[in-house]
Length: 90
Image (cartoon, rainbow, N blue to C red; front, side):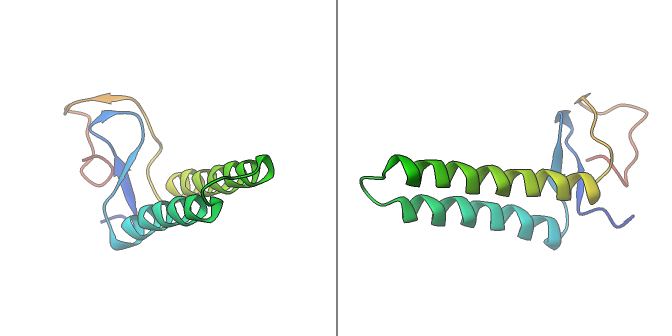
């Protein structure tokens, strides 16, 4: 493998994790979102909702930046094609 943590999805635009490092990033994002949601409590204040939005937005941006850094350049795909590179595409 070429060192990519993510490969391009077969359908649509974006990436899919293919190594343990990529899966760790995705699981970490889910953990951040769930922990932040639990931290809101039952009756969140507007400030708490704003903080939740900021935390989740920063976590998603971090995952996107890591995907760009550790994956091939994204492009729209709709199934297999003769141009597919097995080191970059699923």
